[in-house]
Length: 285
Ligand code: SF4
Image 1 (cartoon, rainbow, N blue to C red):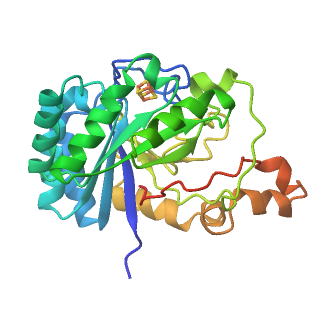
Image 2: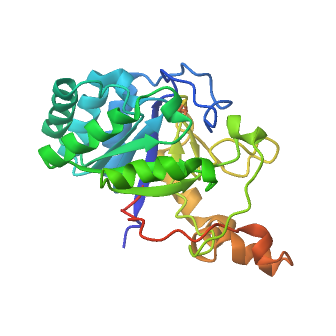
């Protein structure tokens, strides 16, 4: 049986805003972009390698609207589930929002993921997020809002705003890398399962592939999560490398909390989130 293969696809790291918590901030140069024809070839090759889901992420994918539309079409043609992660900057008016959403739908987009947080919303009006979500509802496009939070009181009004508008969202803990590396870490508590990660790989515009979409190239001393580059390795070979790595396998199945406990760390020192209930947890790539 073929393994489930999904990937975060970094077409470009270019972004139109500068969030204070951005995990991508000190990764590859902010304007790196994949060659369009190469991106098309990669997606076709991914289809042959049984990739079933592609999430277009990294910077702001919709800055390259025409390219991304064509890549989404290619995903549809190859039976690949597609998602775009966007900050919603484009949803300034209802007309423009409807135009973008209906165009994405017509190209075959499976899901729109809207990023939302007290950091994003310093640059993008939160009404944009409401407009985009409502337009998705109107057009029948699946969506969810990724609410990036450190679970502090500062985020309560942001959470309340989403609830008032009855929007579908889930909390995504801040990752203390990139610009957020300087933040004070909050002690929070959770009823979430241990730190198990499905470890879907991330492909950068420079064609580097990493074993985990969120941590990407952060381990610059050990290169623990680096799988290789598509210029010298095939997509299938790099996927297989991630699938057969013993430690990655343990992260996927046992979880970081249990692994750390096994090594003598107390579980409560590893993860302490606040109890968060009633969040919807849609399928993630
Ligand atoms: S968090 Fe997302 S929207 Fe914000 S600067 Fe980084 S890539 Fe851009």
